[in-house]
Length: 419
Picture 1 (cartoon, helix red, strand yellow):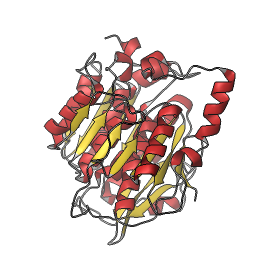
Picture 2 (picture 1 turned 135 degrees about the vertical axis):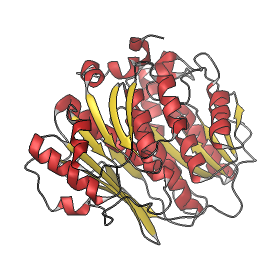
Picture 3 (picture 1 turned 180 degrees about the horizontal axis):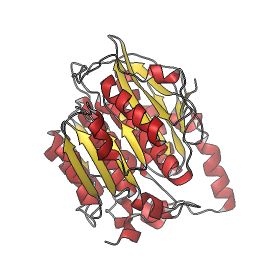
């Protein structure tokens, strides 16, 4: 495995400069919970190789996956909290500091360092009430002493465990934070807005549904992770493909499994790391595929023909369908719940017209793996859309509305709603 091969899909992006990411020195202030480790895992996949992290603890499952993905990854760990100005020294040589702590003393120390040293600080804050939860993300630079700064200060001055971490929201937030990190390092820009996401708090159903995830690539990896962190256990992955080295910039469970089955490896990794009861079926999903035993199906495939088959199958059999699609800059999530009087995702997204145009132009459309269709791809859009898919599933199972959601990395607010 070479550096060039592993990062091939993002090196295809016009004007991409991997050298800047590889040389960048990134500081991270972390806290308890999943968010810090999920961010570090994604940064390793993207090829950000030099990190200095101050946190009380990290999730070793994610750190081990990061090392498997990126042999050139250098993580300098400092155990503890950011509660004294001496922490300036930890980050004095960094190009950017990412603040994921949940106590305001750290925020104030880092904002002072940012002001004095003209250092960007990318700040994320998660929050919960009895009925809702969400996150806020904002980049501080000297001169941006705006009212938004008040919104990203924690109400707790000193370190404290605030509620139970929500792994699904942390997956989404980590993806957006990494997108902003990439933009700052490569282009010197960040969103001028306060990036927000909010969603209802929902409990697992008393009887867990049997779930099928069709596609075990980048979306499937993070959908599987999100389902595991949310507490779902009965998951079956359906995918015929083998792992290629060029998958490793975004398919985070496959670092040591090049050449193996995607569905079998993903199921085994989730069972080992998160005690799921995942299974694998190494096959294409096509007309007539047996899915009678599933209550919820996730569409994580990367071709329109298969997405149409999934839509038609779920509509005819009355299955809940959570459909996601991505490109290098964004993606969308569309749900189908029987009885909602809404068309299935293929119709909502206009996939029939797209396929008709392909056929008229005689463009190739087959079941080949993405190794044979080498479009540019990065981890961020896949991570964000997968997290939104799992959150949409929780909404549907809890009886909430789950209208289509769209993510666009080129916009200031990133996530938009469409009904």
